[in-house]
Image 1 (cartoon, rainbow, N blue to C red):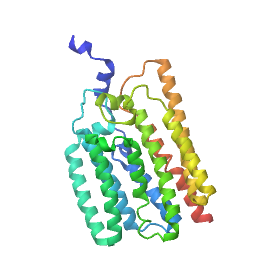
Image 2 (image 1 turned 90 degrees about the vertical axis):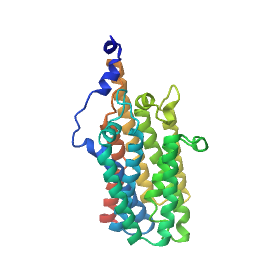
Image 3 (image 1 turned 90 degrees about the horizontal axis):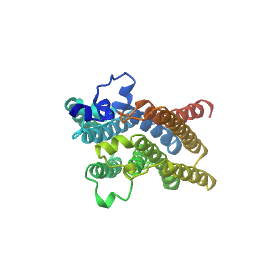
Image 4 (image 1 turned 135 degrees about the horizontal axis):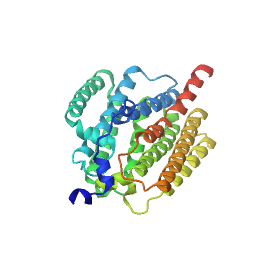
Length: 312
């Protein structure tokens, strides 16, 4: 009788799933690394008029992986596997020991690279970013009242934008400080929309695990994300009009915003069809739409970057 009283959704969520090779891109946070490296390239081309050095890309790539993996390991530490949960949290719960070992090795390697190849000013800017990351991780686990007014997804988005632009801040001349700040701000809005979208898709899973997210309230809809899209477009076009953004980075922002909006629209249509055909069960989130959301931030700006490099 106990087994029969268990909701099918929970039983389904606890069932093992086969991990496909393309799942590992999301499970290992490699999609976040790819997004970070793409936008580091954009910022470096835009504001320093050069490609990122290999060591700069290596440091930012490892650092992004460390931050995302730490967040997922902490989230998965007390994961209730008998309740609905995401595949990435289950992956980090299942392989917690080897992931912690890899994380420690990567941290040591990253520290060696930073100590060996960066200057004092770069380290100072990096420590500022590290402070923001630590505050975010602490808030995501302890839900600090002082930081609760800012949605966790917005915190992650703006920290990510600051991180990918970090190489420019120590070396940027004073006259481009305004455009650099503007570009970082509007890119942070774009990244926040991406994080908020994933949280919306995973709202039932986060609720089951009592994870803190902007969707924790009742009757969550896509309306706040629609408003955020409007804010993103308004800021981007206004900054372009007042010459605070160059055409290249504006096109990168607008193309990524458009692709992300299309991804959300198609996912919503698919979800509505599922709901009409049958009651939608609480299962681990499908990685494909999360991967498509991240690729919306990679493929359009990468294409524009190739066009700029080869055709001026």
